[in-house]
Amino acid sequence: MYLREHLRRENVDRDMARIIMVLAEKSRLVQRAFLTHSGVLQSRNIHGETQMELDKYADYVFLKAMEKTNVVRTVASEEQDEIVEIMKARGSYGVTLDPLDGSSLIKTNLAVGTIAGFFNEGNVMEKGAKMDGAMYILYGPLTSMVYTAKNGAHEFVLNGRGKFELRSEHIVIPEQGTIYGSGALRSEWREGHKKFIQELEKQGYKLRFSGGFVPDFAQVLYYGGVFCYPASKTKPGGKLRLVFEANAMELIAKQAGGAGSNGKHSMHEVKPEHLSQRTPLYLGGKKEIAFAEKYLNNPKQSTA
Image (cartoon, rainbow, N blue to C red):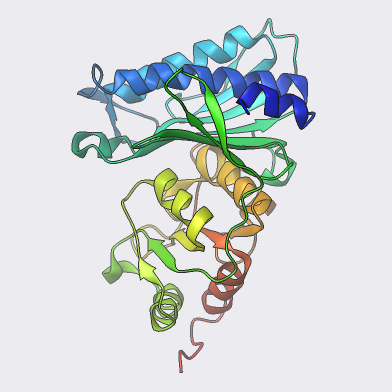
């Protein structure tokens, strides 16, 4: 079954389905651009990060595509200083967008991704709890995408005919996890996070961490466990962005039977105060997330 058929069968809101289809179709341009747009630019985004040429290209491709859908009113992109208003749009959707997450990995040919979230009422600065849908695209050995319209999490792969074909439907994160991935330097981990990881290792969880948010989270969807980027001594607010990355990926985790947290509670409970707001992040199975909160809310918890 192809993506368009699946969206129709699942009765996904027509405007959201259009946005998902357009993002999926334009991802083929980004995929091909890995051969032609892999240089480093002499510019930085609003977060002070050096931009890859493909960052800017992906941002341009997806923004133009959102403008042409005629159903997207606002776009918050990680590569833009401000929310982009599309004045002539007839629809009411707001889209959050990380056009190319993990672009620093391009040089070594590791997997990277695109992350998007959808708000039907158009306000991209709402709590994640009000998000109506989300998707990610993973550029790896295969180009794949996972979407949810609060109807479960479903994966499609780009086939040789240039169409996204259903691979896995109603993905469920395994209850018994096997892997974990954690960002930040170990020397900068706080006590609660350190003890949480020690306990995971004691239980046999294996470290699997490429440094790319999308591929590292995709592993958790299929193998179970947890992906996290914690608050650290030098980054007490975490590293990943609430608006562009965390909210969309937590929705996918929840729709796959899992959960998300900032170490205290769901990230979806937090109303963003500004576009570049960061958050500590834990995503994975419900058991692992509850376990993380236990240690992070009580860092003196014994591992005995």
